[in-house]
Length: 288
Image (cartoon, rainbow, N blue to C red; front, side, top):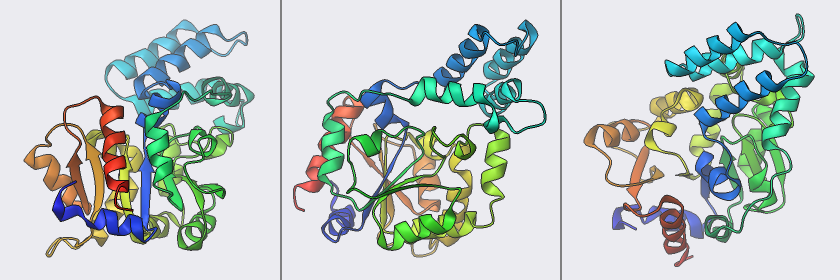
């Protein structure tokens, strides 16, 4: 761990280190699909549906959007297909069924990463994942599990509670799941979105785990990072910046982009991602 980032250990000793867990965690524990693989599962779901929800042309539209890397709109079209009349897609039983099919009844494999995260004994964990593997693995103390639907509860949890904040929702609360451009619009127009971002920024030292640099920059975290950029001290830099664990050596542009958000990259080397990330967390915890 570089000397200039000893504030991570200080934050850990003070119980002020807040992991922000991305999809790499769920992939490692339960083999959950990547973003593009989830869209493939969505296409298979409507193709295999016994309900007359689609025709061949609709599936081709989704595939075309996916081919152009427009995944947010592709998921939006998928949601439209499953919508029931004029009701929102998240009220559709078919949509709820898809989420349950992918994310329910998971059996996490024994994981060095989960053990290392649990060893941090974090009071609060933030996640962009829809599943409940963090709760199942008891990464935090027994506590609450909140979504962006209740910003006040998130602020309370960050200030004095313990548990998990699902920034993009939980699969078992379909209205909370942020999957498409339309969903993202519901999130960023929420009255308290800015205050949630501010609360997260000031909640402690955030440690992004299981997120690539591109993942940190994806549109699902856009509003959060946009607010981070506004808050961070661009002149003097943050004395205790947030941190993202990354593979290899980031480019100068990637470093500059992250610093603009008040985030410092730490490389865990070219080794296998899960194993090396776990080793980094164990080293961090060694002086707790």
